[in-house]
Length: 87
Image: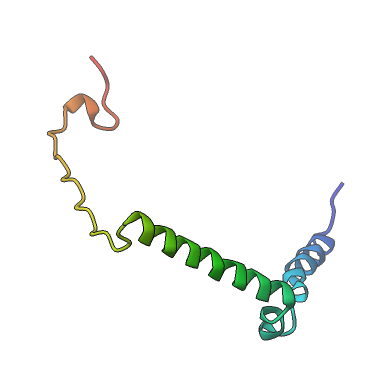
């Protein structure tokens, strides 16, 4: 039984259009909701608590970056090469 591809194409187009309709009309409107404001306030409070804790414990927040370890270049054994046949 051969099905035409038109129904599948219509389904794909409809599914691709869903995220466009799911986003709010204005990003500014979504960012100013009460839940978004509460979330930002909670994050700011958490960051402030972390800063106070770091100051109390004497933990440096701007630690220097560690040097990466050197890469050791080992000689390649013939048996390790791709497409080799063991004798």
